[in-house]
Length: 244
Image 1 (cartoon, rainbow, N blue to C red):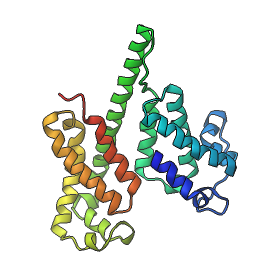
Image 2 (cartoon, rainbow, N blue to C red):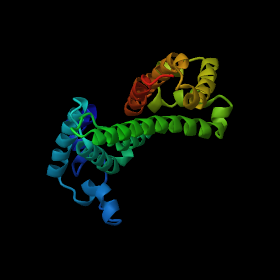
Image 3 (tube, rainbow, N blue to C red):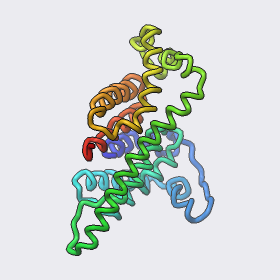
Image 4 (cartoon, rainbow, N blue to C red):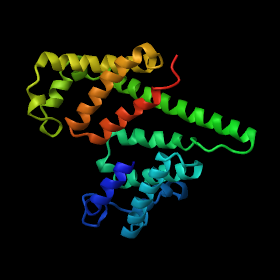
């Protein structure tokens, strides 16, 4: 999120000015829903400038483990509004990030003087961590499920076809042998199907992490989907502890 706030600041006019790339308009759906569209409904460059700085501030607070339930909520709330404002620029990783930040609200690193409150905070923290892990597993499973219903993925041509699209490829990817692309297509499906079941066991983690990190870094730097690739790779950190 610190990186994202830097991107917003450096490209502020491109993203947020009236002459920017994003067309926006007010979207009044009701009091609760409208809270997710503050930037569109009450557009102001000053509001957006302040929100970019607030995003960086709350992100740094979380990085330093000084956050609490309120700052975690405000971070999620800001990201939700930024995403709704910039929705044409989003990838699947951004939507997953929103879900992860929602469960991140339950995280707290500060102890209380009251033992019972510490137990409650621990239960909330562990529940949030488990929910995030399950969300990642669900994302992989659903991705594999929909690939199984897609003709291009099932006949092995999907990765090759993607590499032939100039916006998501380069000369190196376009020149990869067809047989290798077929292997990568089926390997991706198998990986996504097995991830939710085997990632919980230490003996399999090194293999899943190795394949997954390479895959997502290629997506980030090779296909140009930087946010998606990096967000997915970072998620693996959550599975490093609590091994069986």
